[in-house]
Structure formats: structure tokens, C-alpha cells
Image (cartoon, rainbow, N blue to C red; front, side, top):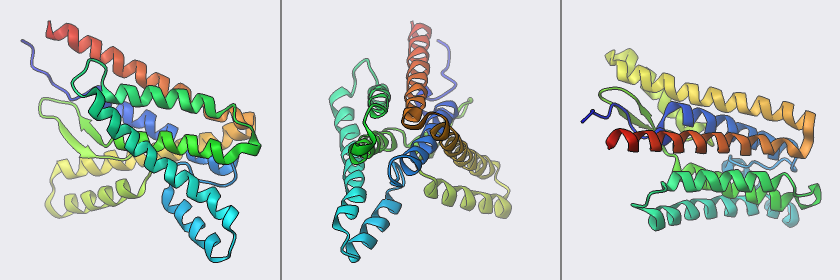
Length: 234
């Protein structure tokens, strides 16, 4: 029997990169086109909600409060899927990513007047993604797994900076690899944000469909890898 030399494809650098680019694009889309609301950065939404509450702008505050609640609902949804589909043939991450593809595609058809609904749908998808995809695994004879976020940057940035400092102090190459990987994921998020700005300028509300394409690509890659591993196991 051939020894398995890598972790799950759903935790690979390739999938994390695709999800990070899509995450940056989603944030740029909702901020640039859907009323300056963040799809992923719920810290920013909470800040803007609190400021508007303090000013008595309750309707505006609701615009930021609703995506926060939708994000939480997405986390709950991903956990529910995990418990329902645990041990079944279709992996929970495949379910979540397929759900994202469908919801992001549907979001493109929501008119500008219903931005709050569109932002909630996208935040719901982001919440499910951040809960389902929490690790990145390094392939090899001795794979390593690191905590990683694909819809936000601050956690990755803190861990990456700390890992680089540890490398400088102790010269452990695992720390260097970890730091560079997480900085790379953040860079891909930034690439996605730039792409989002360009796409919004070019095709307006339909730009979010590109995120749906990324999710579909990720689903296909994960599914194909699962089938290959099943064949190897026979």
C-alpha cells in the first residue's frame, strides 16, 4: 500500500490561495459597489455600526449590523453541515464550497436597491467559508498543518510576523516556512481585492460572479483529488 504523502486537498496551498483571492474580491465588491459594507471584515462593520448608533443613525447602523449576523449564521451553518455530513462520502468542505458558489452566483442578480440583502448573502457565505477552511497543510513525507484564514488578514499577519521573529531567533526553518506561507495567503487576498476593484469598474454588479467561478473551480479540484485518492486506496 502506497504511503499517503500529503494531507487533504481542501487544506492545500492551492485551495487556500483560490479562496483568499475570492475573499479579497468579495470584500472589494461589497465595499466598492454594495454600499461600503465589508463582506468579510466584520470588525470594520462592527466599528461602523457602533459609530452610527452613537450618532443616532439607526437605519445606517442596521446596514452594518445585518452582515455581522449573517456572518455568524454562516459559521453556524458550516458547523451544522459538519455534524450532519460527518463520515459521509461527500466531504463537508465540498458542501460548503458548493453552497458558496450557488449563493455568490445568486447575489449578482440582486438589484442595487436591495444591497443589504446582497451583503447578508455574501457575508453568510464568508462565515461558512471561514469556519470550514481553517487550516493549510504542507505536502510532503511529514506534512505540517497551520491555522489559516482565507477571508481576513489580521490573524495570518500576526502569526506570520511572530513566526518570522521566531526564525530569526532560533533559525527553525519550519517557522520561516510558516511565516512566508501566511504572508503569501495575505498577498493573494490583496490580489483579489485589486481584481475586485477592476471587475466592479468593468462589469458592476456582475463582478461577484467571478467569485462563484473560483468556488466552482475549488469544488472541482477537491472532488477530483478525492476520487484519485479513492482509486489509489483500492
